[in-house]
Image (cartoon, rainbow, N blue to C red; front, side, top):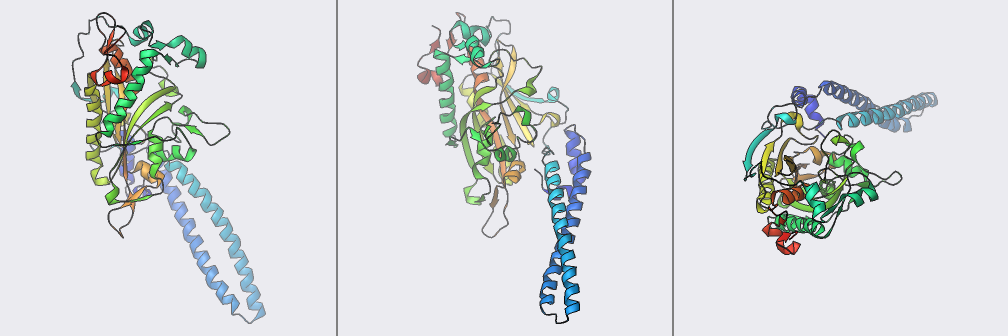
Length: 422
């Protein structure tokens, strides 16, 4: 959510930001109108309340019965008007809040122009993708052949886009999660195990609502929402808190299963384990001061890249253009890993600076020094990494000519083998 003062003082800046995202800027005028209406109602309401307070004192001192009765009647009329204005204020504030909640974050100046994913910029490519002509089995073939993935039983239990991991496949996933948590902890992140079910307010704070409502799983009777990413509970760790400058920055890492309805993936290639309604992910998250968030983003990107490098996987870094930014992001870099069996680059991490966008929603602030005004922190998040696609890359990139899989060295002790399928 944006500071309302931006709409009052810099409406053209927000219009430009929305145009960069390919969105209509008409909502800016709507919000400005609602803000003006709110302030007009509030001004009249406060004036009436002040008059009522002074009149209440004056009435107590009146001796003339006629004058006293007239003043009481006027007071009753004022109370009626106050009740009407309070109801009007509640309505206009609710409408204003709802409209502000659908305005996305403003792209940073460093974000390139562009309309969609086709305009994203490849910043760098690291590692050797190998001979594109070599015979590599896609994971949806070699996984079942080696007894690692059971698609049939997963679908039988839960429907399309579900699967069962077996034996070394299950161990590989567990090893990845444990290793990534330890890896990021060694780089200064504090490990968190959050709830996997949160209340609706948490979704609003993280910016998942209202935009992504159709992609979220929630209980029809209780205020229970399954997390679509650990970003949601991590955002909510410090709701309504005022932190000190000495406490910042805060670096967290968490593993959660993630639940998404994947309605937005219509038309995408969903073969194998690329897109599921349930998947596992390790998430990096930071709370910083506004002055340090840009450097924190670069450091988080380096952490994501180091994770892929340690796994021996070729990858590339993309900077998302303005038209492809996520709803709450001001700048985003994607990490894509090469999957030779699929023959495509797969996103395994999206690393973003959200600025004060989430912090305003969640009322998370800090004081630079004692006595200073509390201001919103900045939040950053990024996958470190998404597990299914990382597993795809391992199964396909580390595939040997005899059809077995070489386990990345950093995972061998946890997997309990150097080679899968030997």
